[in-house]
Image 1 (cartoon, rainbow, N blue to C red):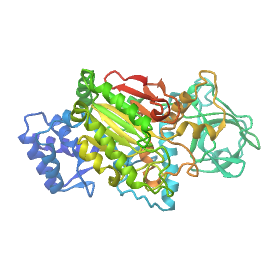
Image 2 (image 1 turned 120 degrees about the vertical axis):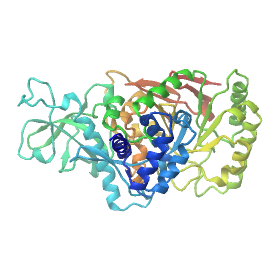
Image 3 (image 1 turned 60 degrees about the horizontal axis):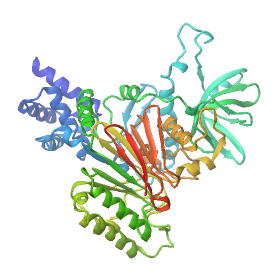
Image 4 (image 1 turned 60 degrees about the vertical axis):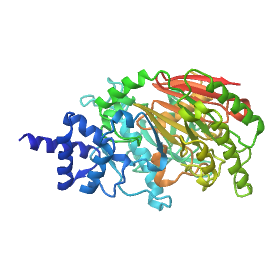
Length: 523
């Protein structure tokens, strides 16, 4: 009887991760539990922490895959594995929402960079359903069962666009704002598409509404008059959901890509995280390797940190790594390779930093790569292999990329986002609470649960990798490398900051994950 309970427990734990144990795999897992001195619950968590580090061909775990998983977990504690993990955007698992069963499921098909037409439509469908399932949990949109007209509860019942036919009065709807014709905007959901009039539209007057943009894919909850014409009176974004609420809904699913953690494991990692008071992340954006003044400034920064009592644990260097675009007209690839070699030599000359600190390099929008599409892969090894010889603790990450430090989730994104978002704004955000554009930007991407909710014509995104741009559940920290001045904004439990442009004005940022404090610095 006890053995059957252990079998059911093991099967349930793997099922929560979207995996099914074959008979032989289950025997191997039970054998692993018999050899452990830890309780079965904790031993299974240590085993499941390794799932994302092995290559699985199917969601049915074979005996060979189970043995590989056990081999990876043997002798290594979960806390050690999760101290610092860098997650590539192209290795993130993809989850879709099933509105019938009201649950997320893992998309098992391997994403392709050459998606078909269905992939493009699925991009918008997934964005809409992700926010819709979040919105209907909000108390303002949850209509009580015995309040027929909603007058006493103060709730706002959502209507589908198709249900508006033949109706008059005010309705709350949610959809995607798109521009299907020049100068004319439409609102779309899964049931219908209707033309809208934004001439009298105003935002709700809260910072949480961010900016409404001229872009396909912008999602807004709107209060409208419907009397022959679709006149938008008020509009805004779906309310932001607390991280803990999202985690309770997605329990056991790894949206972040660094491995799902149990509540007990998160508690243990949070204790270790609070003790890591000396850990510091130094974030430097726009490191122009071909600019002599920039390299001198970088040497000053490294000299300063070389002489402190405890050197930073991580240096994050963001592109662009050249002062001019590296596009088809660029014919000095050998020169760029030599610049990375010089960077490696500069880092290696600082012995304490090179031997202790980790370096993460993130490409910018004008760095060498396949195209300007997002997400961008890591810098090609042709340019960076000489740097890797000088700096052994270097990781070449994608853009965007993610870092998990113990229990804390950090998203890093290098893009000139603020200017482009402001340029495409069609409804001016309310200045009732703030006039700071960076704060509106942070509110926009967090409420949209997406790093770059711009039209594909303005910023192409690989259709089947759009999930790599999501911000759901909301991370602890968002780093937005931009060509604007450095900014810091703490909003609804999220710490967001821009380190500024190092090559333009010598600014950078130091982040202490133990306390989530940001020090905006400059030379």
